[in-house]
Length: 287
Length: 89
Image (tube, rainbow over all chains, first blue to last red; front, side, top):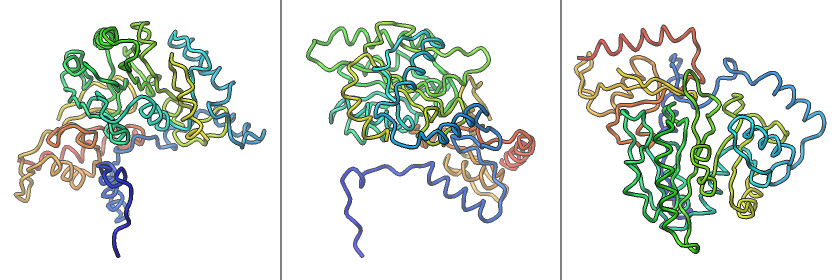
């Protein structure tokens, strides 16, 4: 039988190394071997159950009939809650129309890439990092891959970025970082923001800007003396160029909690720009 | 082995820099992928190599997720790892 013909995109997808490793581990476990399996970026719910209050609210929401499509951009009460949470905890001020909700971060990340990347556009991202290679592939952007170093806790530095920034469309950063569990410090992130602001100041009104996608989905899980840093708090001028990716699935160990309730797995995307372009996409993904 | 002091999230970054070492049965761990398999086979420890996150194939660094880690298993896991590494020369 001949192989089924798929799209060029599907046929050129890169295989996931984690999936391959996962298959080997599964095979060993099925053969009765005990494996200390620390490969999964998720929670064992018997060790880390969701908070009782969240469970209670999820059950209550179901009982009260929140079982149909939520609003495409996220229910208003939820977006209000996100807005007041980030105001109280991060000191950032975003209106409800600058916040989008979806079931998980990935649809929002993909939508954001789609909204700004044209084929051939430069996307700067570090390795190791999570899935940026795939999003760039999906959107036919140009990969600008920078290898982060152990001496910098695997976080990119402004120095590593500066030679690549001319003409770039997107820098994709994550802090706290998956896979490393490390974070940006104030000085380095500030210096990266300055590069972005300076580059944008050289662009004319009609040109596409250089954006920063800042994935902070783990930020509430900082411990010890670590304080989460974000671009907009450090450099208010960055608000115009920054899109945050955030959510509650990590902080509440609720990665698989169904998406229908107001207290569902939340991801928010916040942007200074008109949200119309994102709304179009959120309808595709959040229902 | 080395590690980077964790600051946040559910991950610990560890280094298992044993490429080039020989196993007890005389096999050389030529590539980092060989080290990953050896750790899985001998220490029963499964961690994700940074090359799965786009780093170079010879990167000796790994992600260890604590989200599925049971506290009471940590000591026995470390014993297994220690003894697997001690068998290398």
